[in-house]
Length: 221
Picture 1 (cartoon, rainbow, N blue to C red):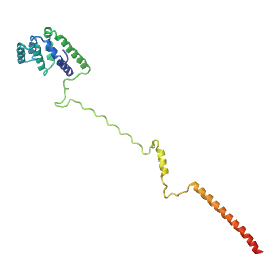
Picture 2 (tube, rainbow, N blue to C red; picture 1 turned 90 degrees about the vertical axis):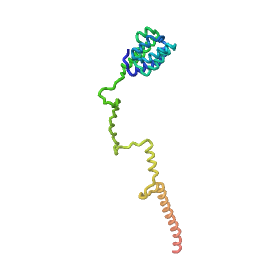
Picture 3 (cartoon, rainbow, N blue to C red; picture 1 turned 90 degrees about the horizontal axis):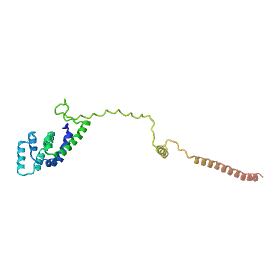
Picture 4 (tube, rainbow, N blue to C red; picture 1 turned 135 degrees about the vertical axis):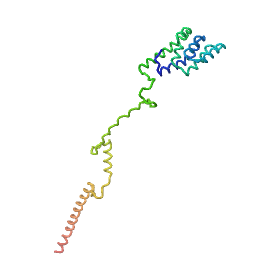
């Protein structure tokens, strides 16, 4: 029927769960459905006898079939679907044909996917028993150390740093060892002051000499 994979088996099982009620209503008589399950070892002899006894007690066949399918969920496999959709059952239960085609569509869809991305059902040979099947991820190669900056390389200042440094230099107080020079304006004012004082002194001396000259002349006469 199909090449069974784990993903396909899960998909078929989910589809079986959805179609279980439809399958039960498609089986409208016990024979040959119950006998086919018993002959292919899908159900036990005890389950077969209990199912026939329930039908004799006028329990609807569809309900008995639904109970059987519910118990077969635990052991679901591909052989159950092969027996369920056998040529005899498809002929005796025509309503199963539509359900059978829906299973074929699900199987064909997952079979195409398995060709693209196959799923391994068995562990690779050569592995020690109990060893992990997961391959450890390879560690990335060590990164080469980044070259350190040369100590003598020029240091690029950020914008605004030069102006901040110049402000700091101007705000620093002069060292005591450095000579304190007066501002140029004070030097010029000092010079002009000394020159003015000299002129005043010489003028006063001239006036005193001029006052002393008449007195000297009078005393001489």
